[in-house]
Amino acid sequence: MIASGIPTTRTLPTPSASFPPVGSIHPDYSPIGLEKLWNIVGPVEAPPFTTTQLPVLPVAIPSPPPALYPSWFSPAPKDLLPELTFPKGFKFGVATAAYQVEGAVKNDGKGPSMWDWNSRQPGGVVDNTTGDVVDLQYYLYKEDVARVAALGFNAHSFSVSWSRVFPFGTAASPVNQVALDHYSDLIDYHIKSGVEPVVTLFHWDTPLSIQAYYGGFTAPNVVEDFVNYAKTVFKAYNGRVKTWAMKIAGEISFKNDDFISLLTGLYSGVPWRANSTEDIEAVERHAAFRIGVFSNPVYTTGDWPKVMTDTLPPSYLPCFTAAEKKDLLGNVTPNALLVID
Image (cartoon, rainbow, N blue to C red; front, side, top):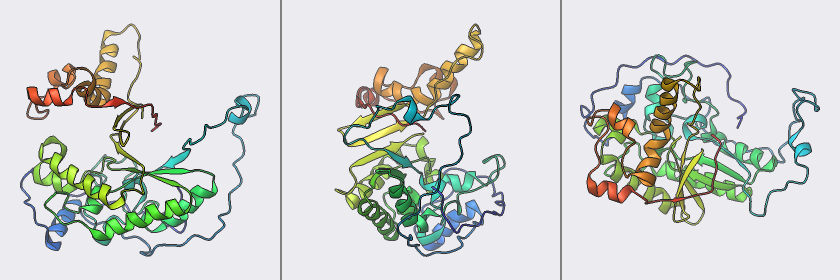
């Protein structure tokens, strides 16, 4: 989505210090504690305005761009499949992710995420951009939703920022009611505009707090904290959101009880040299680390792919107990959903 009124020039982020040793920062749920977490990130760029903008209706639809190629070389989809129509109930929509579009990175009590830190590290982002302002959807969401509706889409998949709802990430920390109210209004405006809200609970923006406190997703503590966050969001928007997702990067999708999906990325490949054992093994290793890490435990063995356990030490890739393997194996059913990332 393209938001209007946002300056196109950006100041380059200031590289922040190396990440503190895990466990060296202890939970402090006060404003001072939150500022200590932001100090790990460093200075951030403030948004050019901090009020929700109202769209001018009706939204004018821009003219389509000129064709890149002649029609005899690249026919339009409508000419390739003129009889194809979407079935009743088909969701044809667009997708965004909180860190990529929201901006307002430190506004209204939001806590930092690991992407706020990572984007300031040398080589973290190729062009040194950050999520500080981006499209500023946090304040321009009504304009964006109005444009989505005007373009004829009937669904929008967006993600909720865990560190906006729980600035400190943990189950023991206070919830940010301002954030819950913001996403509530965002959801209501979608429904009012005839655009179904499809809500992703997590899109890689791990709260920096839990990474600093105990190592984030490398520690079992994350289970209780994420479940608390998920339950809080479920309860807040119960009945208004019909489809929930857990985005891990979408070629593979897991689904539980027709309620929540786990979407993983397009990480398969083909060997560069078909007759090269090294290239074939590299493709298998790549698939194991990007797809197998999710699918092997639930579909095949209950455990990590062997190439992962052969490569990574237990200190980094914790070993599952026999009980955990039993719980993991077969605990999801295939879902026919295909998401192109």
